[in-house]
Image (cartoon, rainbow, N blue to C red; front, side, top):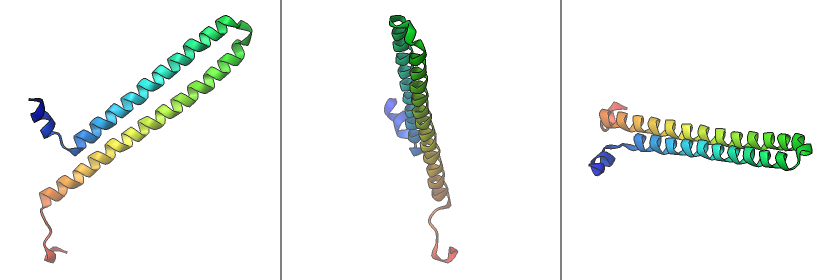
Amino acid sequence: MLDMIIATIDSAGWGAAGAAVGAGLCVLGAGIGIGNIGGNATQATARQPEASGQVFLQMLIAAALIEGVAFFGILQATGTASTAIEGAKEVTTMELEGPKKPDDE
């Protein structure tokens, strides 16, 4: 049954599925990265409370950079999905119209 399902998926479906996996991995990576930053910042502040201002600033900068990279990855995945879907629409349109005859031009 799985073979039949895989065989029925067209190129737009595979492109959209790949883009969804890519976007999910971007979000997952950003969540893990920001979680690590928060945990390590909490430990650093607990060890040296007088350096909490510097730790907070560095944490904010690192979190912003991680979010920027994740946002870029999501935009790239969305662009890949839309390109795959548009490409599949063009192929479907060409298949429906059939081959062009020389006197149609």
